[in-house]
Length: 83
Image (cartoon, rainbow, N blue to C red; front, top):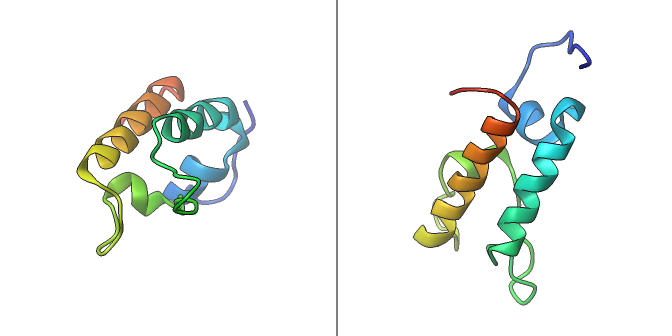
């Protein structure tokens, strides 16, 4: 596992860290497979904030929010991290 020498951020950990690329890919695929991202509505902008709470005024339903959280906790489990 590569060591990161800078300050770790939520965004880097969730969306960019190469150490967790496979777990991240699984997480994103789970979100896409659960139809959270609709081809007709465009793509959901994935940022660290969508994992914490859907942005105000977003079209993320409660059901999709639950799916996103489930995917996040599976990612954390695979990355062997706790919150």
